[in-house]
Amino acid sequence: MELLPVLWNEWVFFKRRFWQITSAALIGPVLYMIAFGWGMGRGVQVEGQPYMAFLIPGIIALTTMNSSYNAVAVQLNIHRLYDRSFQEYIIAPVRVISITAGKILAGALRGMYAGTVILLISLLFGSMVRVNVWFILIMFLNSLVFSALGFYAALVVQSHTDMNRFGTFILTPMVFLCGTFFSPDSIPGAIRYIIYILPLTHTSQGLRGISTGGGVNWIHIVVPAIYFLGLFLLGLRQCCRVEA
Image (cartoon, rainbow, N blue to C red; front, side):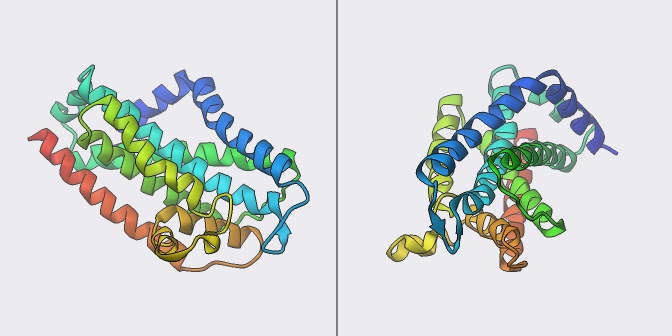
């Protein structure tokens, strides 16, 4: 399969930088759990549950988002603009769709790895998160969405500085507004409806619903799937343009 060389290359990179990747994935989410869970959220009830139980699914959602996006966007942008190693894929006997799918899948797997680590760390905070196949599916869909976004952004943005700005303007608002730390229902007016369109909101609410025993709402699977399909096609088209 043409996909395997792309995945193998990403696996070698991950293995060589295992501890750096793991520590980078842990620092932010663990600090969020300490500050918001143990600090501000101690003794607080949200939607009839302890705040830590409310917080952990949101932390997992934003962790899979950040890790999958950064796993693709930063590295690919550098390879394309600075060391030009991305051109090796383009001239290799590998189809563009295999390059696109391989890079996005590798990023999604990195996101799943980071999310799983945070899920295990949450046990140290006394949070028992219910996990089933639907929980894992929503995590994976979220990872695919933001890995595909990172792939597309890396091929469109023309400098590493602009790459950082892209993350600041697109990802940072979602980190804080999409149901990760508080319910979007408390946000007034039209902004609330915009937030409910965003994929991270559906991931946060989908994971939280399953974690608290509320079952699966299919809208939280369908919306991320639509986002992924659209971003995958955009990334594939942009990769074809780079090849041309």
